[in-house]
Every structure is written in structure tokens, then in C-alpha cells.
Length: 327
Ligand code: SF4
Image (tube, rainbow, N blue to C red; front, side, top):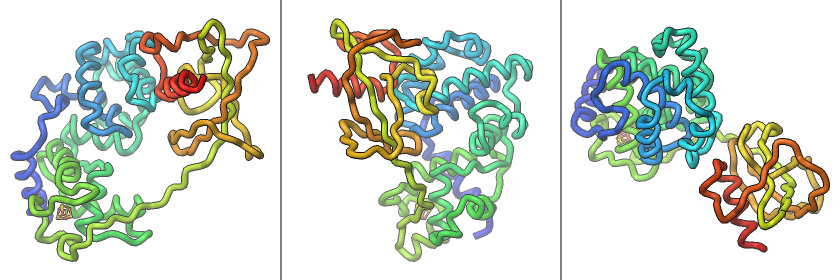
């Protein structure tokens, strides 16, 4: 199959089968660029189906880059609550401020200028360049990687390294409809070449797909090891309220409200009460009840009965619920 034939087959399939997503709506160029920017930040680490309601609410309340650049931080985080990875929304606002200040309120189309914005790496810069500016780039997200690995039957350790996948993606060719083509490849991975049970009978490129020919769809992954980390979490309680602090100590959940904690290095006889998977760590948490002796800076009290009234990360909410269930 020639590259151009693959391209046409995938685009034809996309034209008939694409999902109607809010950031794909026909709109002005300026809005399309803003929608692409917001959706790409939201889609980092989060699935389409989860992002849709968050995206709709965000756009309704913050309709353009200028509004975003000036938007109140606390209210902004409220719109992100539940999506996790809060550094994304802080970076998104900083990016909007830079776009207003340095790029005359227009999202830059240049790959390197996009990459200079906080929270935008190689992948997001390619995705925005392709989707918002129709540049002939193929952003290698998890969906496209899966199609590529299966189509070429890439399984060995050296074959599935990022550098090799970047080289191999040229088999997809390019299209004058670059924006649609990038989205078509992502959509093919999301809807047809699914992680489990790919729907090969509906796939436009099955004839030359090596995994389909071999009837072996198993994927191999580069193994990234999560680090085990241990934390002592201190609970201070007064009048049935819990004390939280603004986190300026740890790199995760930065500037958000958490219980006072400290990391323990290789503790002995550590009995965990809770465990979490966060960023690249397996987090074991031991809870310790303490008496308040002196004031703790940047702290405040929350009433567990009114959790909805506070802007809190899911991590903190889970701990409050645990404490309330283990009184
Ligand atoms: S034929 Fe099946 S395995 Fe191959 S790319 Fe299509 S969906 Fe994926």
C-alpha cells in the first residue's frame, strides 16, 4: 500500500465516522485555535469522554485567551477540580498571559514558539500545529502509537522506543488536510484500534496491517518503574474541622490545599493507612493524629461536612473521607 493510499483510506473513514466533539465544532479560526489550546491541555493525561463536560463549562465561562489571561486563579482551579494534574491549568493560564503579552493575543503557529509556552512539549506543540494551523505534522499520542505498533508489528524493546516510533510514523504519509489527518489517526486508534479487542473488521487499513495478518494484537510497552514513596500525614482537628496547608513543599499538587505531610526516606516498620498512585510514584501514607501546639503558616480549617465549598484536590478529599469513616 502506498503512503498516499493509506492517507486517503484513513481520511475517508474519518469523514464518515468521526465523533462530534465540542472542540471540533465549526467556528471562527480564532475560536478554533483557542478551543484546540484548551482541549490539548485538558487531554494531556485525561480521556476524551472525561474532558467533554469540563471543556464545555470552561469555554462557556472563559470564552477567549484574553479572559483566561486575567481570570481569577481560585475560580479557575474550581473549573479544573476533578480533572487532576493541576499544573496543567496553571500553565494554561501562564501561556494565555504570554500569548497576550508577547504574541499580540494570537496563538503562535510556529512549533518552537508554541514549545516556548509553559506546559507545551513536543507532543502538544505538534498537535496544536497540526490541528489548529493545518501543519503537516503527526503528533504521536497513545492512540497513534498503538496503530503504528500494530500496523508495523513493532514489539521488540528497540522497536518501541520513542525515537524509533518517530522515525516509523512516516509510513502514515502526509495530507493537505493535515488538521483532519492528525485527528483521523487519533480517532482511528481511539475508536477502532482499541487497546483491547481492536475492531479490525471496521478498520480501513486492515489489509496491510501485520498484526491483523498474524492475528496477534498484543502490545509491548517500555517499562517505566514507579518510585515507592512514603509520607507521614499529620491530622490536626479542632471543633470537628481539619487543618490544611497550602502545598509549597512537594512538586505534586503544587499550591493546592493538602494535609501537612512530610516524606520519610526508607522508614522502618511503616504501617500505611492509605495508598495512592500519583504522577510517577506509588505513595504510601501513614496517618498521625497530632495536638496543635503552634500556628502553622499558610494553613486553614475546613469543615468535612461542607467539602463542596472548598477547592480541594481529589487526594485531599479522599483523605477527609477516610478520616470521617475511621473516627
Ligand atoms: S487492522 Fe486491527 S490491529 Fe491493524 S491497525 Fe486496524 S484495528 Fe489496528
